[in-house]
Each structure stands twice: as C-alpha cells, then as structure tokens.
Image 1: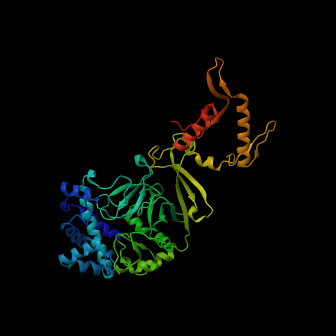
Image 2: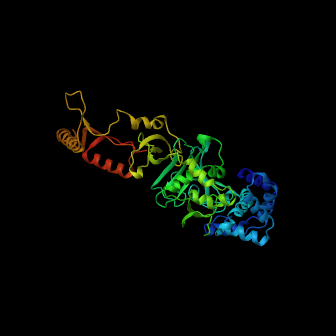
Image 3: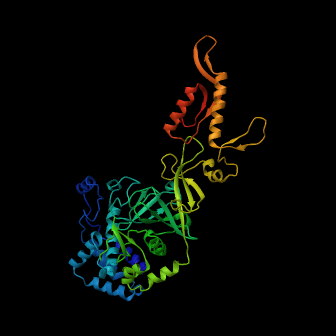
Length: 259
Length: 197
C-alpha cells in the first residue's frame, strides 16, 4: 500500500502548482525568531496541498488498499474544504484523533508533497539552523524520520537526517541524540545479524532515532525503510526507549511526555 | 487520546494495531511483526569518540564497540575509523591510524609499567608506585651527578644534558604546558613532546 501511495505522491508532485513561498521578509522574520522558514506554525499553507490530496486520492491504485483504507479514501474525497483544513491542522500542529488515524495518512502524504515542492524551491541560504547542529528540519522545523550515513564521496561517513514532512536532508553530528542533543550516554541497538539499521538510543532523554548505514545496503529510502524496520521499533520499545512517529504510523501509541 | 507527530511514543504490537496501521485495515500486522522479530536478539553497540594516539595531529576517531558500556556488560572493540564530524581529519586516517585496532589488540601492547634491570634480558612487571619511585630516584641520582650550573666561562646555564624526556602526542594543551614546565624546571634540554604542532 505504501508503494501505491508514494507512486500517487510522485504523480501528484508532477506539475503541482508551486504554491506561494515565503518572501524575503518572512524568511528574515523566521530567522529572527530562530524558526525554519517553512515551519507550519509560522507559514500559512495555501490550497496546493489539497490539489495534491485530490490527485493522490484519484490516482492511487485501489487494488492495493485494504477495505478500511478505501473507506478512509472515499470519506476524504467527499469531505468539505474546511474539514480537510482542520485535519491538516491537526496533523501538523496538534493531535490527530484516534478515529482519524487512517485518513491522516492520506493527508500526511498530500502535505508531504506540497511541502516537498516548497522546500525544493527554497534557496539553501534561507534555511535555518547551524550546520550539523539542528535536530529538526532547517526548512520546515519538522522532526526527522531517520538518519542515513553516507557510504562514500566527500560526504563519507556523515549522517544526514531526513525530514518527515518536506524530504529535506541535512547533516547532523553522529553519536549525538537527535532529540536532546546529548552526546553523553548514546548506545546502539540492532537486530542480531543485521548491520544496516541501528537504533541510536539516548539514556539522557529516553529517546531514539534510527540510523541507516548505506555502506551495507546501497539502496535505501528513509521513510519506507523506517516502516520496513518496525520490528526493531517493537524490540527497542520494549527496552523503554521512545521515538517520534513515522507520519504514516500515527495513532494511539503508548505515549510518554512530549519532547 | 490524541497523538502529535512531534510526540515521543513507544512502539509496541498493541500500539501498532491501534495506530493508523490498524486503522487502514492491516489488522494483525502489529502482532505478526512482533512475532516475527521475537527470534532475533537485540544486539547492543556503542560508537565512542576519541583521539588517535599516534601523532600530534590527533585525528578524531570513532571506536565501535559491541556490548553496551553504559550497562557495564562485557564489551569488545570491533572497529576503529576516522570521525567524519571531526574538523581535523574529517573521517580520514593515515595507514597507521587506520590500523589502530591492531594496536589495541596487539599482544605486545604495553598495559602496565615494566622494568628491565641492569644485566637482565627480561622485562618484569612492576606497580605504578614502584615505577614512579624508581624513575624519581634514578632521575635525582643522575641530576645530582651531572647537573651543570655554570659553563666553562662561568656563565650560569643550569642545564642537565644526561637525561631526556618523551612527552605524548595525545595530550591537551594544558597537559603539554605542564610537561614543558616540569621538564624545563629540572634543566633538561632534550625534550621531545609531540604536542607542539
């Protein structure tokens, strides 16, 4: 189903109206308050994400959807604009209600498309955060979905975090907690026999994030492989560590305090 | 209870069933996943930052260890590589630094003070206290015998030429300063302290 969803996302991204972008004044303002220029709390989204949503809902391969997913799809197709905006608002900044968990996946997918489009058009110099130092996305302030360690070239061994919303990748120092920035008590967990993905656990804040080693597998996609390695999350969760959710696995979890 | 995308959550089989995974109709996916990973053991590892011990460039290294050192479990160093985030070497290492793992594991590695007494052909292990006492005693003997306060022309020189001193490459500026002060205060001229670049 995720394959069908991302195929629809790609089709939706093609020819998507670029949407309105923050101008120099907005970017300067965001820098002043230390926020990313496309932070959903600062930047008011336009209607382009709903264009992406309607395209995704229309184009997705329905043969790949379980019944409950298709019910959610149909509900979204008939939903009025205001409801969609409210859903998007709850996904971006507030709480997604349990009964909305299925619909929120499609909404998340559409918002990803719109934000990816905007982030791609942003000038690199306008991004927030010091290089290597920010645990949240320099373009939109979202938490990262996972980190990838580069296999070679001039970026050999660097970790790049990948944004869960706008697909921006940025460098972050390795062996350092993504959530609290601590370098004190970091340890790694991996399934015996697999070396390409490890959970970087921080005992200071009790959080963890996944690190993928491209050297071992060559082909990886942070969002999809994060979902593909949920088994690791189950075992790491049993050890008491918590993470920020993958945007496609939102819902009622055993939540701890917000970070 | 609502969930935000910035909130910490613990992933569990039951939690997955109640999340969008279950809501989308993938019922049983959480349990199946949990059952699937059950046979796998969770391995612990650490990556530790350190400085290469060889020369004064003091390249940053990442030391990979199996086992969780924070839990006091038995651990073993499995790999050493350059630290990509270190501003000096940016992930690179020279051949010696790249072979540092063999240095750690070498059977010839010096782990405690040893002494080869005059006339003997063997090194014997001694305690740190004994080593310190012996070094201090021999240094004092030698200095008392060979210290030169004035040269032939009667100029004060205060030098001690019969003993030399090796410092280390991987010490901080502060430790390098102390080494210099100590050694120069005794009058030793032959100081080799790599922390000088």
